Length: 388
Ligand SMILES: [Zn+2]
Image 1 (cartoon, rainbow, N blue to C red):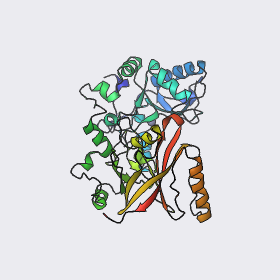
Image 2: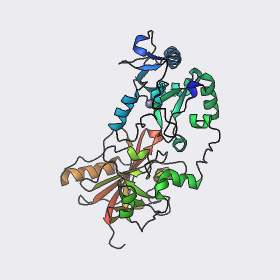
Image 3: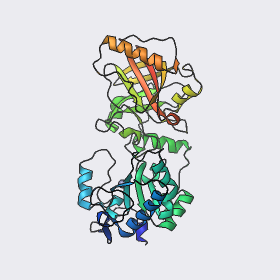
């Protein structure tokens, strides 16, 4: 088989004695048309193709691509894997970095997914034999979350065909793989909950958190909104607060991810965050509040947090740039909390006549607000429900 089409993943690990043949140290290969700050090895043909690609990028005005990772030895991958519990490091033998055919890239804008560097790669990399190896929305095939920095050399012909037919390397090398319909309910269910939920399905209001914790110990609650698909477990990953944006309840790579708490409730402020999906799942219905410009369309949301049931009623909606900190610093007293609540009301684009008291618990539900490069945040005042 063409060595440039080698498939490496958890079900196709490299042999224990695998060592790539023709590696070059890019530090010793001038003139380079990209930056590299340490000794990194790549397959010779991969390096040459990359250098041609970055030379073209230079001509197009993008002269500062940075190579941050290339070939990794088995020992190094073993070390990385052992030291990282984010789920984002492949098992030793299962990383294509061990072939010298994969590059992790960066750029002065942090390879911003909306920036010129990333866009240039998406438009041009295939012409030089590179593919975006782990695209968004194909986690069910690659079993790896979207990695916009990871580019794989497969050769020009294959790269162009894969781009044109929108195929992952898994599908290109195994035509028997059937791509799921992204709007199929069975697919959506599996993507959100994964195989561990089979036989343990729960629905509001009958939530047995103890059972869910046995399946995924990161479960801290459940969230439910009437007349919407929002009926999901809430997950909290202590080490990597963003873990559940790309992994589901069963800890599988997923385009949906889960509803997650970026931190545990602090000073009575509860934060939930989730994607909003075109298939209307996750927090899509929160976007509807913005689209219709009224908090009344879905006025309240229910929460079971560690066994206590709350109903939260929205009092404000904010559009927050990623850079802006709108949270109340921990340990702020009543006076500061009142000022913060006033500020939330003042800077909101949607509000009503509900004015929370400083003693009230506050729920913030957050989802990405793509066109504004920030988050949409809904603020609700929480009341404990007596009956359940
Ligand atoms: Zn990588």
